[in-house]
Length: 372
Ligand SMILES: *Cc1c(COP(=O)(O)O)cnc(C)c1O
View: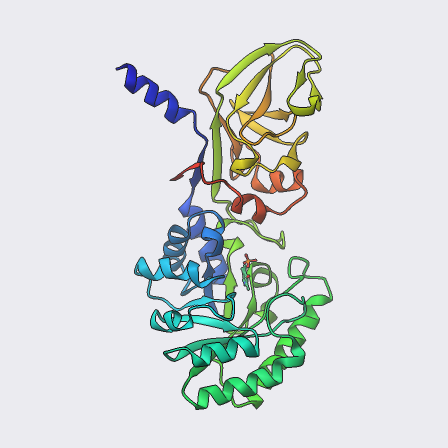
């Protein structure tokens, strides 16, 4: 009896992240409807923190036909879970386990001659997407090396060492569709396709667009769109109403009444303006609440927005609950889709001067996860 009670209190004292797969389903259908070609569900970083397998299965059931991840280590669990659709991994060291990739039928991106040589030498016949840098000097091959990369890949193909099934690029400024950088990237990608063709390659998959360009610029769609953020309700272009899929709640574990002028938290960065109740939530920056949001953030308690006061600590935050306070164990909504007045991930990102992606991928391991 006593034990059961204690267990209940402990369970209620934990922050909880709930993921709404119905939101993922709706977002996928919208994106699949917008894409001119196929839709690849990008489930890197554990499905942007939403659970890679859950997001993958949901997206595949609602219009996505393929999966994409960053590293091969993110690819294996998807295959082990029995997902047999085309699967691409695009960022690996040159000495990655290319043989295992071929054995598991995982497509790999090749951004350099060094990678190409290693992939060609590995056992099995790899399915390769040559990756060109479309103008952000990040991943992908330097355009200066592209012609040689294409010709070398063609020779490896003729030797039966690999098959070039795709050419990919990535846009650096797609979140702002009016930026001239997009036209330059489209032009460079078209040039890269021509060079590949002239080298004798016949890549069936030609892909440049991620979420923002899928929503705003059909000229980037080619045969395939790679979308990640959009699946979980983040639209970097801010043009389309998608459905955020995460809700983070935390219980109020302590309430105290304080006088006006009471300093709160590390550094006393806040003092209460008047007599009020302070509530404690056991969730902090180790759980993914950006410390930079200190002094601006709000949470929803009993249907009312309440300010987070003082600095966000590693494990806890203090909320000004006002005149009447609340009961212990009541749930505060840190963020959610915004449909009940709670803050959104977009608001948290703005408070912390960052992007939504960083907030959703930053939720800590000790937060209990569940499906909505
Ligand atoms: C993360 C990533 C994507 C997905 O981008 P979103 O904007 O999240 O849709 C697509 N392509 C590459 C190469 C990526 O790294």
